[in-house]
Image (cartoon, rainbow, N blue to C red; front, side, top):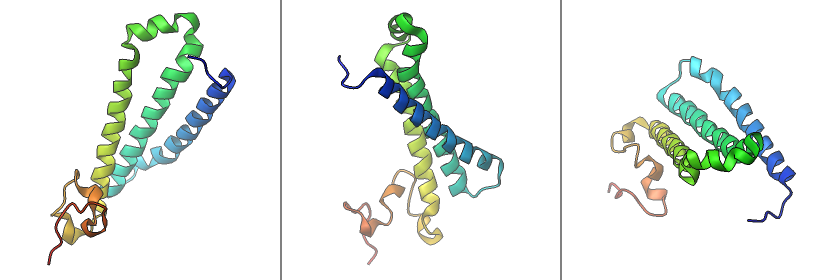
Length: 137
């Protein structure tokens, strides 16, 4: 496959993305040592996991080929090739679950008992495109 951009731009954009994500990681990491409510704990954990997935994916696809050079295709194939993306995808899914668990704690206490983490994305039910719950009338 031929790229329309010189390799420098791909590496530079990857470096910028990694740098930005590491700044985010640095910003959120101290919060892991603080007493936080459940919303804060789940949000911090989700941010750290999502940032980790992005950084590892960039290192895997953008930098490993630079570091390992001509042996990269063989190494990549030995480790599962494109199937290795499942690792990064599962990290992103786990972060999504954590974000949704945090969202559950953002629902006002009187309403929270009627919601679960897997449905919290639809709160408030009467303002979603597709109502998740019937209105209490």
